[in-house]
Length: 158
Image 1 (cartoon, rainbow, N blue to C red):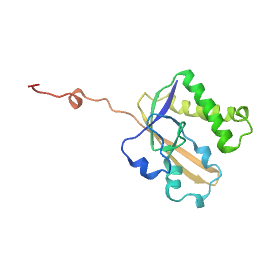
Image 2: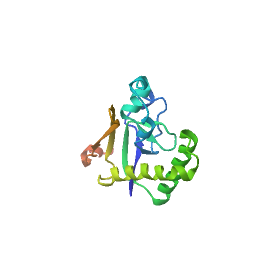
Image 3: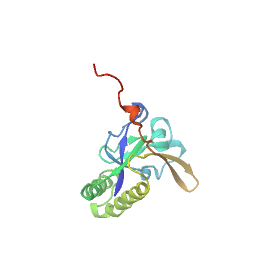
Image 4: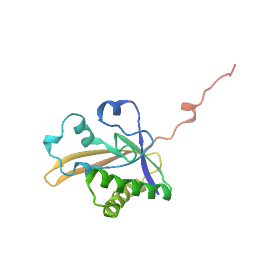
């Protein structure tokens, strides 16, 4: 099974998000956070999080890019429990059991999104508000194969 981890190509996420996700933490779309937002909510750093931020599942911060990587079943199970707790603590779910189905759906959606891409593929998300609510689209950026001469040093060692 594959899921996605936060990746930073530069320091820009520190400047554009209120709370940036940490490099390497597991992520999902997190569009549920914006389900009741309107145009009035889309200002400044909140707009950036809405427009193209993935949700980190440790810090619950945002990140612009995620990289697809394998996940162990035990880690996946831990993420379900962590997300259930987040739904209780932040969104007022009455119990862990009440949030479990939604947590499982969110993680399954992300796993399905990652399933058909090779490892190390980068994903970007883009959101917009529509008459029907939040619309998400995704872009995959495949990692190019590195040529040996791009990473190897040539010449004498002396």
